Length: 430
Image (cartoon, rainbow, N blue to C red; front, side):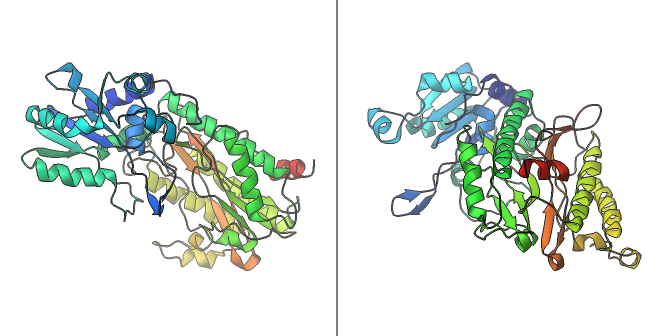
């Protein structure tokens, strides 16, 4: 791993919160992700399942975490199963967790080699009444590939049909959405790396540079600061490409007079940041571009103020829609008749701003969080309004990551990343 080791007390706290929510005499099992094949002997880079990482800090494949707080023997209350390492594996694949090292990372005392998992589980299931299975119930999830977790659930149900079943996901949705201070520090670190990348490209962008050359500058800066790279597939969209919300080709030249919409950010220690900025290729916004830009910025600033404890995500978006409608009227993109005759299910502003304004962020860019429950302090949300005008050849999105505070305005984790149009022009021409 490129990142500095995380204090294991974070994972000890996370496990304590999870087990406190479990029903009596129950077991929970969490699996690592697979390494996914490409073709021949090629594989995709390993990315750990966020749930087992959240609860243990283990960041390697073929790992299983078992939690059984009511186990009759203390040694079975927290068990970590790891692929047994040896000298051959060390030579070909590099260092894997030993039992001693695993304790340093996780704080879990009982570490058993993976080949003994089924034998150990068989003993544990004779003591337990209930199994917590870990299904993915995120509202954006679309899953076609059978995961290691899914294979385990299928196997477990076939072999232990007499046990009751509970779901881990509702517990994790609540726990992971409210961050510990250590997590906020890791997200802030990812934001700081993102800032370095953005400042780097402000000095690099010029007419005729390509989108992929900008992407290369960003990944260089991210990796040299101990990030694995982008927290999500980067969007570097010049000109009309910005009007494709998930434009990821990043293969076009940036033309003089155009804008470039960036939706790019670094990860750090598996924690995400999420940033959008829109800059002028030539180093200066036109009068029209700046008017639209400042309208988006005003919406972002006003929307941020609405992220307070007790607010509801759905109602929040209705209020942001009203703010955006006012700005679009001011820009002449909507008129009063458009608003008066709008479809309540698809308001008039959606013609120019068709996506949501905020989502939970953390270990996943679109992180866990139950949207029907009120917002709480120490939740991290993005704020990302945009105005997209294909007829005028540009789109603008601005996005920061903010932490909801118990009292007062949200804390902007990206406050140091340039966003005012005049500052961006100054830095690009300095």
